Image (cartoon, rainbow, N blue to C red; front, side, top):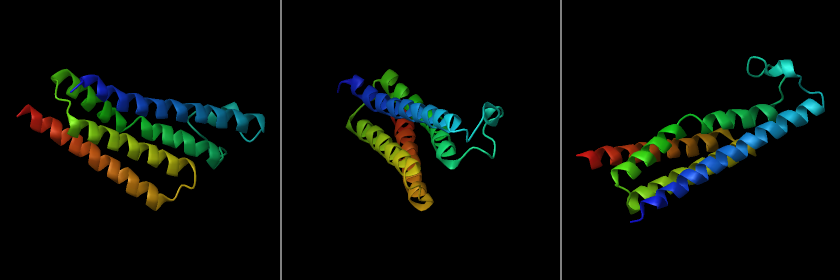
Length: 138
């Protein structure tokens, strides 16, 4: 199997991360121009004055920079070890799809039950991806 195929889920997740990063900036600038926030509201993170429509994309971005790091590391390890196969690709794309769904829920109607379910499922896929990687070392 062409090992470069595993790069596509990594690129897709990075693209989602960059899209949310742009959304964070857009929401912050919009709130600033409307005088809902000032520069000082971001001095130590986000003050209590920062409205939810600005806070939520920033929190989503933080989510995309936490556990997904383990996804990127696992994918690179699979690449280096030449262990990419159909199962690995299916797991990788499943993880990305679940992270996209998590972001979509978080950035739109933000039902915590739905978001938690999808977040938990993505973490389960990530654990399986790592378990499979450890098994391939044996």
